Length: 159
Image (tube, rainbow, N blue to C red; front, top):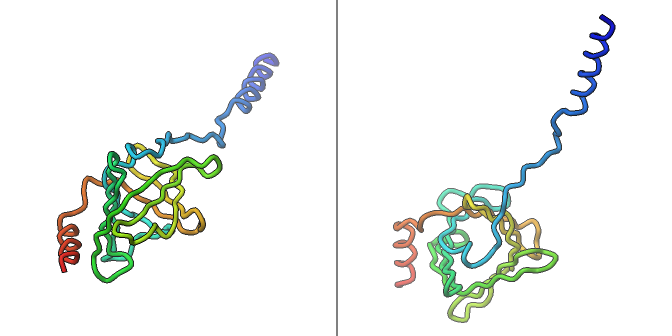
């Protein structure tokens, strides 16, 4: 009987040390930030951890071959806007992938360069302003810019 008791204590002791590790992280594989992986349409889903206000939106479509972008937004204006330009991606040894852009028609560069992280195969990515870690945007992949938004923005550019 004494041997059975010792055996039970030994098993309990061994089980305590082979329990699951709570600190174990499951890493979700990310994609490298390249024009090919950004190609397509993305919708701004969150800005600084908050959903966008009703009636505001921002869609950006990247063309990998030409390294151009088209933005449809109603974010910082009361009217829809259609904006085009070029983008580039660089890999900084300390920051990672950084995307920058320049607007067409001599309208200058983007206000910020953005560090792109968490580009996931499921279709989301995080942009953090290079010079303002508090400016964080989450984009999700979508099939296309809704036609109603395209029409609204294009009507505004026709005027």
